[in-house]
Image 1 (cartoon, one colour):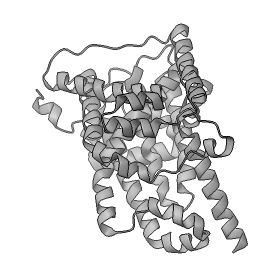
Image 2 (image 1 turned 90 degrees about the horizontal axis):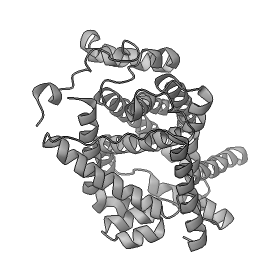
Image 3 (image 1 turned 60 degrees about the horizontal axis):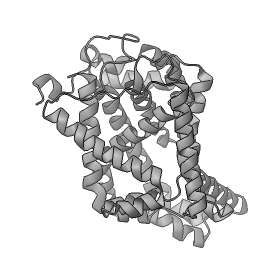
Image 4 (image 1 turned 90 degrees about the vertical axis):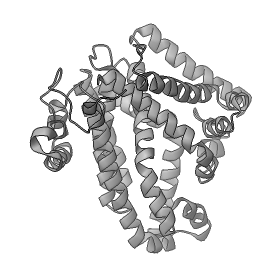
Length: 127
Length: 234
């Protein structure tokens, strides 16, 4: 099996495991402490709201998840949705699309801008 | 769907890129036990040589299996230490802090058994997600400009860097050693596998820790400071 197909099956397995474990998400997250950055500085860190967004997605509430941390919510949706799609295609022996990110300066700049925009949102929304 | 060769735990085919394969990647000829032990030894005592031998491409299964085996073994070591020292360590912590720490610790044999069974699943999820974040970080710092192996290379670097889970053999401070060691292995591995500079590889390794784990890092520092103060006052 090609590494490309192995990756698709691995991604699919990870996505399926996340879905399967989602009923336990609230129990697992209950043990997590509050964000010390917010406690000390009264400001959200870059990942503030990510756990709550994941819990909202586990409850199939994407609107709340996006409001809590848009980037984290989209990341979770992409990880699980893309993984399930890739896994099904690979398991069915169907052709897999190739996603190849060229590490151009524009892409790097865009990535940094997205991170900054998400943090700005968290600061303004007071997540 | 999956042919017979795919469903086995067979090592990767002959190398297409990179070195000749580290001992774990040559387990077909060395044997599974010898390949695993020699790889663990190599990644501990000579990580540069280990990553020099590691294939840049070939398969996802080898680093995945390696990470799950050493990660599971490291977790068992950690649980053994916890079993022997949890009580005495908790007695050093102020009662109000102890109440916050106790929920994180497995207390009953059933919880322990469940966590050991589920651990490989969490290890695979963690390895995959952390490799994604590491890869994005390497992309952000421009470390993938001439990389031939792409995400697979990053996954291979991270999978073999999971050898740091064995740092759990050191009680109390094993996780700190493991964290520093993990960054060092990621730096060495990414520089070698992606043909980038150690500086870019280091920034790429550290960036996700700051972005994603600043909270956990601060909690760790707070916990460490509390334990240290408890030792001093005791």
